[in-house]
Image (cartoon, rainbow, N blue to C red):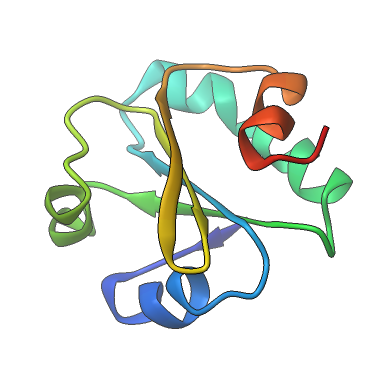
Length: 103
């Protein structure tokens, strides 16, 4: 799964033609580690239909502040450069696909 930095965010997320699910996470976050294998599986299942990427809030504090991430994991779905869905916590594949709009 692609780690996105502040410098890559516009080209990877905002300018994407596909829906993009961004996982705001941190190494020390237990629920984030629980969600990671589900996101890896989701990435394989939605390849070509959506992009899945991660933002480490400890390394990319500006992005966490910019998108008002106050708890993790926080998942944002972007379509055409705009946030269309926002949720926090651990979810299953079905819930994630619904979030992206791929059910």
